[in-house]
Length: 151
Image (cartoon, rainbow, N blue to C red; front, top):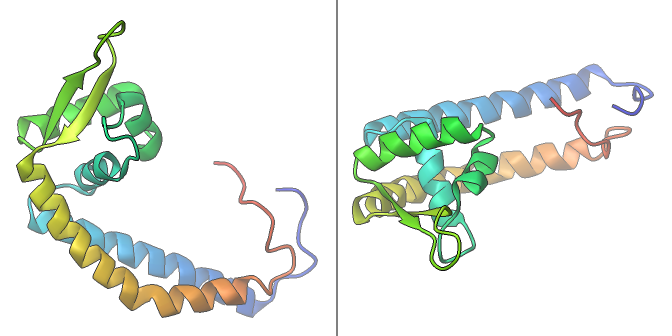
C-alpha cells in the first residue's frame, strides 16, 4: 500500500463487505456446480485454464501453474488426477524440445466444462448489475485507484 486513504466511511466498508460476500457466494455456488458434475473447484479451474488459453497448441504446465496460482509440482499432481479421470491429455512438444508438455481437453473434459461454463455465464449475467453498481460506487472512494497490496 502506498499510503492510507484520507478517510473511509462506514458506507465504504459496507460496500467492500458486500463485494467480498458476493464474491465468496459466487465461489461457493461455483464449487457446488463443479461437485454436481464430479469435479472439485480446482479441477474445474484447470479445465477452464486449458480451454481458455489463447495458444491453439494448449497451455504448458508452467502457464497452468500461473493461472491457478500454484507451484509447478502441485499443478502436475492436479493434472495427474484429472488425466486419470479422462478429462485431459498431455502432448509432448515437437522439434528440438520434447520436454515441453502441453495440455488439451478430451471430449469428456470438453463436455463437463461446457456444461459448467454455460451455467456460470448465466450466473454472471445475473450478478452483472450488482457488480457494476459496486464498481461504480468504489470509483467514488478516495484513492480507489490504488493497486491492492500483494499477498
